[in-house]
Each structure stands twice: as C-alpha cells, then as structure tokens.
Amino acid sequence: MGTPPVLVTGAAGFIGFHVTQQLLAKGSKVVGLDVLNDYYDPALKRARLDILQRNPDFTFVKLDLADRGAIKALFAEYRFAVVIHLAAQAGVRYSIENPYAYIDSNLEGFINVLEGCRHNGCRHLLYASSSSVYGANTKLPFAVQDNVDHPISLYAATKKANELMAHAYSHLYRIPTTGLRFFTVYGPWGRPDMAMFIFAKAITEGAPIKLFNRGMMRRDFTYVDDVSEAIVRLVDKPPQGNAAWSGDHPDPASSTAPWKIYNIGNNNPEELLHVVSLLEKEFGRPAQKEMLPMQPGDVPATYADVEDLMRDIGFRPSTTIERGVAAFAAWYRAYHKL
Ligand code: NAD
Image (cartoon, rainbow, N blue to C red; front, side, top):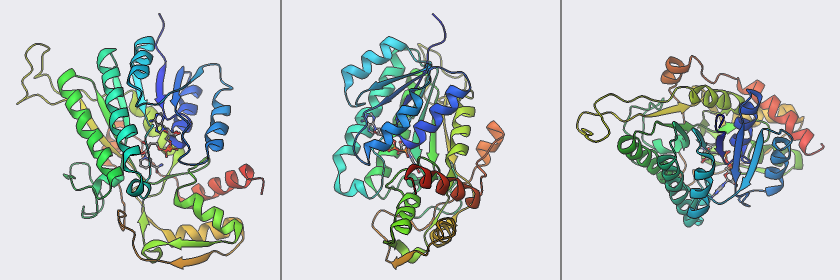
C-alpha cells in the first residue's frame, strides 16, 4: 500500500479549501470531509468543492463528525498518517444562541477524530484552535506560554477544551498533536459571517455597517494563503515530547507529551475602521457607518506573538492588509459578478 492520503476535515470550509489546494499543489492525495452545513450559504461551500473535485487526487466524503460509527469506519478504511482537522462550528456570536451545535461538532466531533487517530496509527494531528481562547484580559501580544483559561464565549471554551483533550491523548497514546490558534483569517473565498465579507457586502449594496466598540476594535487580520502555508509547513514538524515515556511504563510526572500550540497570526493588529477605509477605496464607494457599543463575548483587540512559528518553520504570516484586502475585493467582485 502507498502513502495514505491526508485527511482534511472542513475541506469545503474557507481555510480547509485553501489548505487542500496547497496540499494538492504539492502532490499530496487528500480526502476532504465536510457535512456542508448551512451556518452560511452552502452554495459557497459547493463552489469551493467544485474546484477541489477537478483534481483526481481529491476525494470528498460528506459526513458529520459527530457520527461516531461513520467516522470510526472512515479512519479504519484509510488509516490516515496526517490529519488536518479544521471542521467546527465557528463563530463567537452564534454560540450565544446555538450552544448545542458547538457541543456536537466541536466536542463530540473532536473526540471522534482523536479516537480515530488513536486506533489507526496517526503520526500527526493538526487541529484548529482560535485566538478567542485568550479571553479578554490577556496582555498584548498574546503569547502561547501565557496561561489562558478564562474563555468568554462557548465557542472559545470548546476550542480551549480541544487543546486540553489533545494534550491528554498526546500524553496517553503518544499521538503528536499541533494546535493552531488562528487570528481573524481573511482572503478570497472568505466566510460570509466574518467582518471583511459583511463590510464588503454592505458597501457594495449601500447598506449600513455595524461597527462594534465604535470601530476601535483591533484584529490581527491574517491572510489565508499565509495561514495555509504555515499549516502545510507544520505538517512536517510533529512535536516530539521527551523520552521519559515508554509504552508500558509511562511516567506522568516527568514525561512531556508530543503536544504543541502555535499562534497563526500576522503580529500586526488593524483597527476595523482602517479596514473599512481600504474596502471603500477598493469598491470606490463610501460606507455608511453605524457606531455601536461592544458585544458580549467579543474582545477589544487580538494580537499574535509568532516567535515560535518563526523559530520552528522559518515562516510567519506577513501579507499586508492593503495587499490582502485588494486580493479579497478582486475575488468578491468576480464571485458576485460585480
Ligand atoms: P468554515 O465554517 O468556513 O469551515 C468549517 C467547515 O466545517 C464548514 O464547511 C462546515 O460545513 C464544516 N463542519 C462544521 N461542522 C461539521 C461537522 N459536525 N461535521 C463535518 N463538517 C462540519 O470555517 P473556517 O473559517 O474555514 O474555519 C476553520 C477552522 O478554523 C474552524 O475550526 C474554526 O473554528 C477555526 N478558526 C477560524 C478562524 C477564522 O478567522 N476563519 C479563526 C479562528 C479559528
């Protein structure tokens, strides 16, 4: 049998689509899993999928991660060596009204992935976490070594829980796991529920833009190609842990699990008002701004310390917001035939 394919969960999602494209371009075979839920327009997911399915090295499976039996069978069939787990119920605000979607996809779904890895010899599990795990009171820039255990939304709590569950499995079963704390990813094929897309839609349709925290919110906007490149480079860097563990006699006191977390951010926060002004320039139309107070579950600023990433893979996201917004706007116009 040849090398098993890479599993990408959430392959029809925004980041999963770009990561899958990069893996295919590098010559990897990919199994992409997605349930194609309707959290946002499924037509956008299908359009991404249509592009991926043109490549014969891509196989799509439509499955719900919470379907324990089906996920078990999928892992047993392919015995994936590398799993890039990006499927999740995303969104901070949505978690306030729809808590169970997060339990099903982000907790049950995650344990099904961990169990699949445990029983089928997975050599590296990379999984999506989020900058939201830093909560509201962490000093800037956010550093991975700062202890963060005060999430302020259920979404963030499930992502923090994923990091802890991954640690337990890395410790117990020696599965190398890498957690990816993404910071406001944007770019072509971006998510309709995220700020950049919402602003573009409002500007092009002449509708008002709601600016929470009166536009002074700062986000470490990170361009999606940079994010995919970081992930693809990290695939070849499974964490090692130390040697104080041996199959039959693990020494929990002195062993370090093969477990690692990275910030995947741009190390350069931007004010939302600035992003709106760039979009106004791109679309040649003024925005109608509606200044509003902070929303529950939101944080005023995100800002990634990315020293670890630089040290371990010699790469960090660095696309400027000007270049990134221009690429996003070009795609937005083409996709919507504007
Ligand atoms: P996305 O919503 O575009 O993609 C997620 C995909 O997962 C969707 O296509 C959805 O259909 C699928 N999915 C959801 N629940 C599923 C289930 N139970 N079974 C199978 N498929 C399921 O989101 P994205 O922006 O591509 O995010 C990818 C990952 O990164 C997510 O885990 C998200 O929480 C995390 N993240 C994203 C950002 C960002 O800025 N985009 C920031 C922080 C963290």
